[in-house]
Image (cartoon, helix red, strand yellow):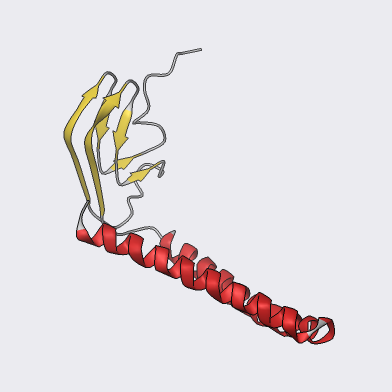
Length: 136
């Protein structure tokens, strides 16, 4: 286990402990303040939590929309495993033929067992990378 992973786990554990202690402290404070005041404080805290939740939702929607924009470079790497079906590594899969999107691709296989077709390409248009389909 490397140092970064260990530190990350320690920070998550400490963060959980701090959050738990803060929530316990808030519960004690509301319990000691009485029912009327606790209800008012809970309403105020609820408003701020809803505002924070709305802000996180908007930020997530913007990030998802920006991530879904086509283009950019892609690096596909297989570093081992056993594959019993078709494997496709590509930049864009399912794009109509003749309309490549901007960006580069790097496909590589470092290790593994492959018992089906392997397609490594920049663009795979409309099922070119699929295993042979039975003719009807």
